[in-house]
Length: 117
Length: 115
Image (tube, rainbow over all chains, first blue to last red):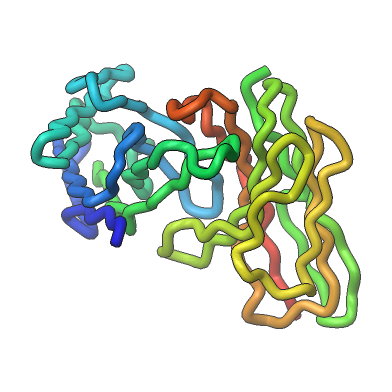
């Protein structure tokens, strides 16, 4: 069964500190892995996307890593800001199936990050 | 334009009402999706449209009726909903890029409350 496990479930840090969120997956075959940020009551916003051959991708203060051999990914946030408080979701995509024009997404449960002043 | 636009942002409806959620994208994406998301849970796939044709219906009750009038628009018609249908409804779109499904973009969602 395809699964995406994220840890920790929730995390509280002080403004200006760094943090790292983890994602382990069992999705196979694998197409790509995405990290999304979701504010409460809003849609997910893409932070990074990585394919099998990529092992790191940065977007400003966000840096994602991927180890396709161990099926692990991490999202590192540097110099956290109050606006970083959100849910961070790891999403793994399998290749298109049956000739359809989409890839099956498997969502993690998310890590709720709270940044305190 | 790299956005998926959803309207309305908020909707309160009675169990006997008929309403519609709308979704629009102008990125040339040929796959469009409806998701339902309950609080503190990941999104759950409801429907997938590929080239304006319904390709996936994840056993969604018939009180939810999707429609794809053209390649840029996706509607979700609602009728006789139940209070447990209250949730955040997300629209998304993606490119058709073979096995590399890049460009998967979500809208901001419609917060639906059924009373």
